[in-house]
Length: 94
Image (tube, rainbow, N blue to C red; front, side):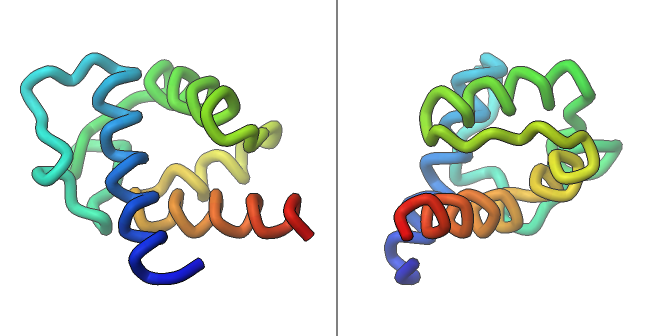
């Protein structure tokens, strides 16, 4: 995936998270690509948020995250999530 496409995907993912979780007080540009999505740092999301994000990812990108460990790794940050989705899309396109 080209850099421009990857950045577009990251921006799309930020907006998807904001819309899915109804984070009205956060703008996409305020979310760092490297910031942790869960825990006390970064967005501070929890397991219920993770479930909602996984469902939204499946609907929007057709990417299924069935394994909890894989999900935990894939949802580490926006950058990691973008890489995960790009890899899945490239695999399914091949």
